[in-house]
Image (cartoon, rainbow, N blue to C red; front, side):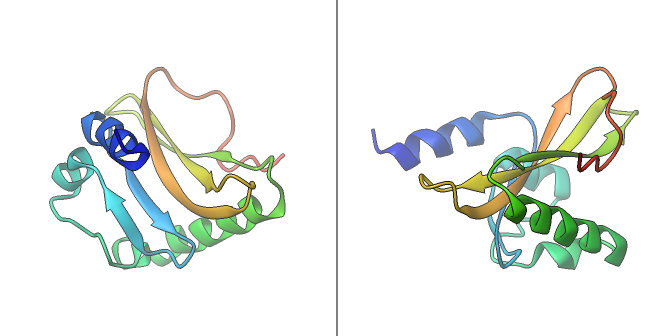
Amino acid sequence: MHRFSLIKSVLDADTAPVVICNLHHTVVYMNPSAVARYHTDLTGKSIFACHPEAANEKIKQVVAWFEQSEDHNVIYTYRNDQENKDVYMVALRDDTGKLIGYYEKHEYRNRESRSLYDFT
């Protein structure tokens, strides 16, 4: 099986929404759960079009932090108590460690104990 097909099948099967963006902040992939959750397929569109300006600034700040170090890969961004989930932004890197994009990760579980956007 082709490596990309294998990875795509894992993401497609995930019940949590997965939205992947490139460094131009363009949505390059949404899994079926994300399309269902957001009621639209945003592939090919700017992630900034569906967020308020304050959230867009946070996205830019996180990506800049990802670019500072190969050790900067995951940051806690949001808590949704109604769904008992924490949300993170995750860096995507190529085989050399170069940042190539990012995605939003939803974890349904008990409340996160770290502070939001803790860059330390």
